[in-house]
Image (cartoon, rainbow, N blue to C red; front, side):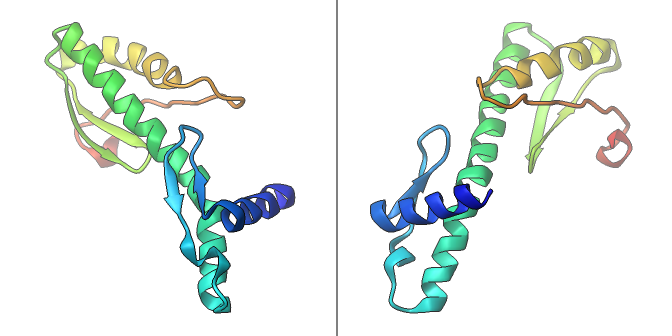
Length: 131
């Protein structure tokens, strides 16, 4: 972790940005600021952005894949919203078993990473019950 933090700070200083795994950039012009508070803020952002940004990229890819599957399969299930790392769907009871079975595979395979992507599926009458 320490090596990651140091190399990411250095990258931000040298390049002026950091990237997600998918190449989306966060520009950090304050990485070389003479103002210590601004520089330290940019360093904290540099360390956080690649991981948090990659997580955001992954859930966006999952949303696209799930929506495409719903349309291709002509299901009545609707993708309602995304909350952080969760997708919320409205699923008719007749499709629930199929959606619960298919969703993890769809979402886990949006990217090939060195770590596994894990997906849990919950169901309930509302978002709170689904947890």
